[in-house]
Image (cartoon, rainbow, N blue to C red; front, side, top):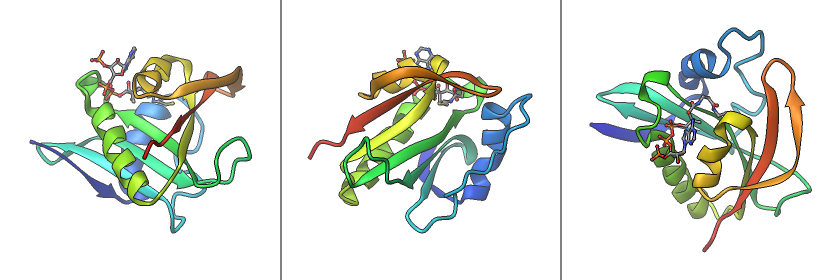
Length: 145
Ligand SMILES: CC(C)(COP(=O)(O)OP(=O)(O)OC[C@H]1O[C@@H](n2cnc3c(N)ncnc32)[C@H](O)[C@@H]1OP(=O)(O)O)[C@@H](O)C(=O)NCCC(=O)NCCS
């Protein structure tokens, strides 16, 4: 059985470490993890945490005033391409809508670009590098009401 619910920042850390920080000496904790407006979602299959994502309220001048940044999106390797990431984003969008958020944005690794564009995100601007990880693009998605 698949379930999605809010989890703590600490609960995201194992999957962040394993999937996003494998063989990298980069922090798996993000500033903003414990901010009052931040929320973290987890997808569980048979009670096992499989996929995580975090959303943080931001103030980036490129985007509308009521905006959130999507961070730390990761699905355990053996469970990728089963639609779980998509289910998490879709649930998150319901929460964002309830909170009257107008726009969501993220920085995506090149390997994950198709995942985000598939969920309606659009690439903005030029490629940029993040040390140890590689090329990234910024993407945004306006929440439609
Ligand atoms: C990117 C990631 C989070 C996607 O999670 P997922 O649970 O595998 O995603 P889904 O199964 O819901 O994929 C939904 C759709 O996105 C697209 N997609 C997902 N992964 C893709 C990939 N590697 N290549 C191309 N398209 C992809 C596909 O259209 C897919 O639908 P389909 O399988 O029916 O074709 C996951 O692959 C992952 O954790 N990757 C490593 C960490 C990472 O790069 N995270 C993003 C940091 S910016």
